[in-house]
Image 1 (tube, protein in one colour):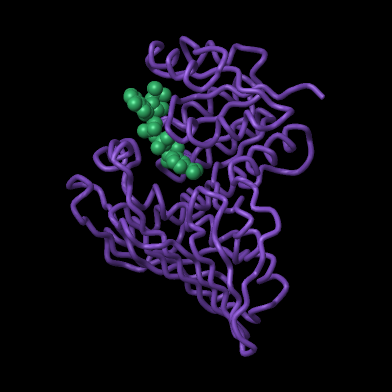
Image 2: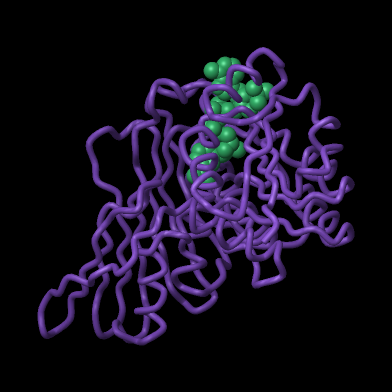
Amino acid sequence: MQKIGWGLIGASTIAHDYVIPAIQVQPHCQAKGVFSRSIDRGKSYAKDNGLPQAYESIDALLADDAVDAVYISTTNEKHKAQTLAAAAAGKHVLCEKPLALSLSDSIEMVAACKQAGVILGTNHHLRNAATHRKLRDLIKKGVIGQVQYARVFHAVFLPPHLQTWRLNNPDAGGGVVLDITVHDADTLRFVLDAEVVEVTAMTAAQGMAGNTLADGVMGVMRFDNGVLAQFHDSFTVANAPTGLEIHGSEGSLFAENVMTQQPVGDIYLQTASGRQHIPIEDPEDLYTHALRCFNSAIRGEGKPFATGDDGVKSLAIALAVRDAAATGQRITVQYQS
Ligand code: NDP
């Protein structure tokens, strides 16, 4: 089987920590090189990550016939132009979240990839977790009856080396909502298999972010099946576990330590008969699962685990949350620009 060649656009932390290892662990794909705005940084990043080369320009990367697909993990304002360039060059695109800074841009990205006949995926890692996949299965099997409520605990501490553009650069799509709430939106859509209709929210500034950006948010999403979901996202909470609770007419699911990049976490089912631990059979690394599915999609088998359309929807919800916080109003989510 011919190996799928990956080109990396962005010498980022996420690529270093998770996505390059997820590419390298798979037998049928290979990382071909990286583009950074600084060729010196690109070269040292390539060396540190075992990549064969650093490209001088995005054009050089996109002109490389050995590159079949690109992984875009630059700051958020660059995702759109880089996706359009990759699509025009006939490369498949796995793009980081949020897909773009506006709904219309994200829709344009999906359309451009479709027109070019290339695959677009969104790197929403959480739905790739065995825990979240198990929650979705359990709900579909009806183990908690009719689902009524969900609660997301996603208040974490942004480590010092990431306390950069996320906190001080609105033009790069910083702030907690586009960074974390966008993941909650995707995870809830996936686990509940339902769509968000409207949202309310309040943001907070607990001292980590600059004046214009929020470093915390709490709010509620209403789904089209009547479920209400509460969410709490933060960059400043250093000592709280993450989690997801789903409450139904016949039982509740408690997923502990699951809003994370690691393949960890526990699920408990509580019903009238008591509380039971739900085993997770294969806690595959989240990013490895995402890359495996994306590679299969390139080979014509299935779709990326989170598609471009999923990225449009999670962005639409996050933008609605931001509007709700800014206006103090309940906001109907707009999925079309
Ligand atoms: P980083 O800040 O690590 O990287 C973003 C850009 O900043 C890089 O492309 C790089 O530019 C530049 N940069 C990074 N480190 C340095 C450095 N030491 N010196 C100089 N420049 C540097 O961002 P993240 O990896 O945290 O996020 C990148 C994207 O991935 C974002 O879109 C984010 O939302 C997303 N993300 C997704 C996650 C997920 O699990 N799905 C988790 C974390 C982030 P250049 O390429 O030009 O060198």
